Length: 280
Ligand SMILES: [Fe+2]
Image (tube, rainbow, N blue to C red):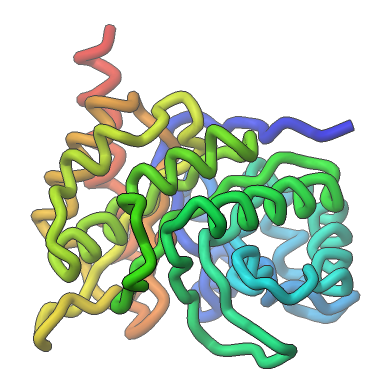
C-alpha cells in the first residue's frame, strides 16, 4: 500500500547545506523544517548521515532527489531507488520529491536535469515511470518542474499543460518551483502568471523559490542569489491562487551566512501569513 505524503504547516523552510550543518546542530535555530538532497545521504552510515539523523530528531525533513532520471528511457536504477527507500526508512521525511527530467541515456549519466520533449509519447512514458517509482518506494512522491535552456522541436504541448497532465495522470504531487517558472518564462517567452494559474492547486505539496543569474544573454537558475523581486511577485500570485504551501529557500552555490537564508525565509513566511489572513 502506498503511503500518502504527510504535510507540514505552510511555513518557510531552508535547504540544509553542508556549511550550515554544524551550526544547526549546535544552535538548533528556529527553522520550521529543512530540505536536503537525498543522494548526499545514501551512504549506509558515516558522520553525514549521523548528523542528519540528529537534526531529524528536532526538525521535519523533506528529501529532494536529483538523480532518479525519471524521464529517461533507460530502466529505472533499482539500486538508486533502493538507497532512497532505505534513507526514507531512516529519516521518515514529510515529503519525497524528484524532478520532471532525465539525466542519463544508454548507461551514461550527465550532471544535468534535462527537459523532456513535451509530447503525448513522453507524457505516457514519464507517467509510467513515476508510477513505477512510487510503487517501488511504496509512497507518493512530488515532482518538480525544472528550469531548461533548450527545447525540442517535437514538443506540441505547452510546458504548463504537460506538468499538469503528469500530476493528473500519475497521481503524484507537485513541487512547484516558482523560480523555474519565471526563468523559463523569460528564456522561452511564455506568460509566467498563466503557467502558475494552470497548476493543479490541490496537488501542490511544496513550493521552491531561489535566485537566478541575469548577467548573461539568458537567465540562469543558479540557486546562488537572493530571490528576485519578480519571483517574489510570482510567488505571491501562486500563494494567492493555490493557498499557502510549505515553501523552501533553495541556495546551492555561493552559499551565504545562515542568517541570509533566514532573512529570505522570513520574506516567504510573511507572504504565507498574508495569504492566510486574506483567506480567513
Ligand atoms: Fe527547485
